[in-house]
Length: 81
Image 1: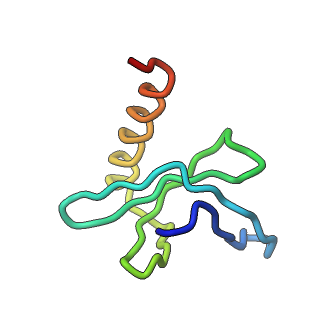
Image 2: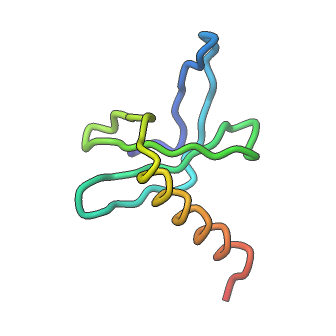
């Protein structure tokens, strides 16, 4: 994903600007962790392809992987070396 922000349309048809926190890759997939620009209290995860197309529906197993990466990321920024 090239841009740091992107727009999604929520279930009510409202556009929301999202900000990418970070991306990471596994052997088979590329993931993105993001949050709403105006609210960083909730984080979201999805897969994306080489064209930058987002696939926000991920499995519970994939969410666990993303959640672990998010926790590690947050721990690192809270306790820098």
